[in-house]
Image (cartoon, rainbow, N blue to C red; front, side, top):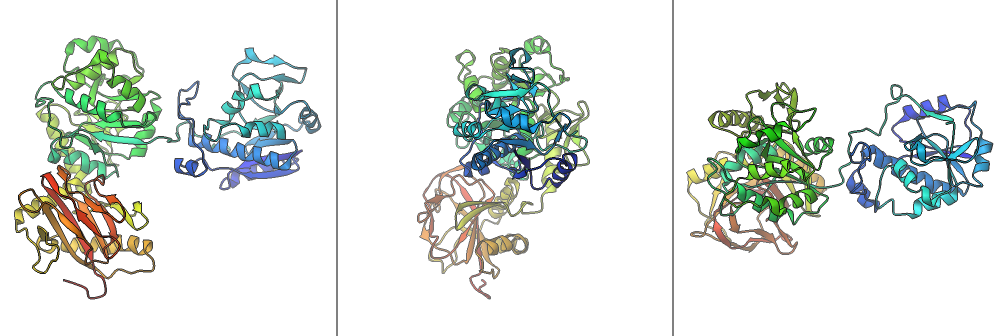
Length: 626
């Protein structure tokens, strides 16, 4: 019988170990495995595949890992090879060690006449459900491990014909699920064991969860400038929270005491637009600092193995009478931070929809959002846990500081958190401002420090990280202090502008384009080359001056456009030919596009507020300067 051995190409150590430990094995066919460590959800989509979004480990209650996704795809590839060979085969993983004293290949060949699938090694989860067949074999009930098994073409065909590619679950779970549709047996005495992980580390890690959903960072803030700490710290982590409080007339009180119920009701309406299997990451707007990436935050969320995770704080506020109920909750990770804080939470959308639509917990706009969520949690109706250690969400505390790696660290819990909430009184606000300054001071004077991550709007337009909100606010303030808004005398499409050369940013802007943007642009539009930055100017639209700008092209080889604020209505930058708008492009990100001929654009009419933007033009030829 041929032995199909599954091996990831980069794991030459496992291949060498397999050959060394199984040197007597003949007729080996190598099956190049899918590398679970590198496979992404986009890769699955290109394969026409998807994970089973509802699946959870029946024992650990956790989602699938990258390794488990790669493992299922690799075994499916081996099943296809069995079909192509059109003969029974033995499928083996590359950490298998065969007990040749008890290994009987002729016997396994004979079993292929009566069985589609025969386990040569397994762990049985339900021994009471096992059925005896004879002295050598039995019918398994709920088997784990796919280290080594015999498979016939008929069995391979059955496994492949289901919709497993559209609803991927771990390979051992899938084989057990398919037992009713297969003739299955298992050796009573395993003839294969797995190599120790001390010798060969595994590619199927317990916490390397496969992210098969989108995370939606969301906040609610009606005052743009108060959101600077949140948006700037988030942008430094390449996170752009959606502010669903923009242009909303706030009815949640002044928050000097209780209040904030309006946040609950705004969020209720918004989550209805999100897919049930996605995840919402909600934070307050005015006293939040991000200090880690969305990948780290998401993986930590999955480790809780609960649908919703809330931050936890030291004080039971606003109703101290609820404290005894919180104290009754038993949790091995419970610390002095034991009371729900509503300023930070993360959860699967379907659960949050049910929470927010539960009529037992209705709240008025002027009611209190924290009291609302505390009652929801204490009801026990929902799958919620508190982040007692500050593993993701760290509320204000004197014990929180930056460690040597720049992480938030809590001396009380010995835990490094990802998001800091400066909730509380004057001392809390002071600590928050100190931490905000530390984070903002890490960024360069003007431009955001991560380059090269490009999001394409179409084949000839892309968006790239460029400025933080704090940097945008500084440019707005400098422009307004300058105050000499106007247009060049010869401009066919006059606008309210100020040249960046007059604002003091010109040299640093030139240097940024030369060092970071030129390589990206020249690589994308090869074989073109850049000739320099020609001009740059801030622009201002208001209802009492200029409200729109007609369709035009630019005197620029490549143009960059940055939205400096978003607390206005109308005044969208649109590209009619490409059917593209900057409406949903976050503040501080730059749209890069060819300036001439093909990319005519206009600014629609401003309805309310004041719009500020930054436009950058590059030279069209050597010597094309102003």
